[in-house]
Amino acid sequence: MTTSDRFDPIVGNSSLIQSLWSFVLEVSDSRQPVVFFGEDGVGKKLAARKIHATGCIAGSRIRFLDGESFKVQQLEDHSQGNPMLNRAGTIYIGSAEKISAEVLQELRSALFENSDQIPRLVFGFRNEPDLKTQAIIDEMKPAGSFALTPLSQRPEDIAPIARYQIWSHSFKEDFKNRWDEFETLVLPDFMNRKWQGNVEELLEAVKIYCESSAESDGSRLVGEMNTSVSSHWLKEQFERMHEKLLDRWDHEDSIAASEPFGETWGGR
Image (cartoon, rainbow, N blue to C red; front, top):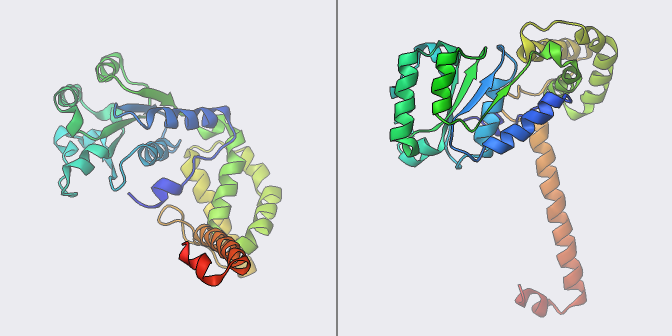
C-alpha cells in the first residue's frame, strides 16, 4: 500500500460522490465483501483504497487482482510473513465479471469455511452481473454495493477533480494563477467533453495542461500524487506542527516567566 492510498481524496460535488463518501464510511468497518459497478476509470479502485485505508489494521496492505486470471489460491499472501496482516488486508478484484462461475463458487465456499483467514474482498464489475453471478455474490452476504456512473453523467465533478489535480502538481506560489488560467481558458471546453476514459482521462488531460503551463512560465511541478504525497502537502503539515510547537513553547515560557525557575521545571 502506498502513502497516497491513505491521502488521495475522493473529489467531487455531485450527489453521487457525496453518497460514495457515506458508503465508504458505512462499509469500511465490515469484513464482508463489497461490490462496485461502473465503467473503467470511474473510480472503483480509489473507492476500494479508501475503504481499506479507513477500516484496516495499520500495516496491512491492499492487493489488486484481475478477474479473468483470478484463482482462489491468490487469497493467500505469504509475502507479509504475518497471517494477521493477511486477515486485516483487502483484495480488489477488477473485471470481476470475468470470474468463472466455478471459481466464484469456490470463493464462496472459502469465505464460509475460513472467513477469518481471508482478506476483505472488493469486487469491481464493469456492468451489473448476470443473475447466476449475482446469486452467488448475494450468498457471500456483501456489506453493500455501489454503482459509479461515467464522468459525463456528473459534470459537476469535473471542476473539483481538475482543481485538485492542478493543486497536487503545482507549488503553492503557482497554484492560483494556474487554476485561474485553467478555469477561464480550458475548463469550459472540458465541461462539454464526453470523457470516454472517465476520471483517469481527465486527470491525464489536466496533468498535460500543468506540464505545458510550467514549460511556458518556467516554473517547476510537484511529483505525481499517485506515487507520493505532494511535497507542499507535507510542507503544510510540518508548518502546522511547527506552529503548534511554537505556541506550546510560548505558553511554557509565559508560565516560566511568572513562576520561580525551579518550581516551574520541577513540576514537569
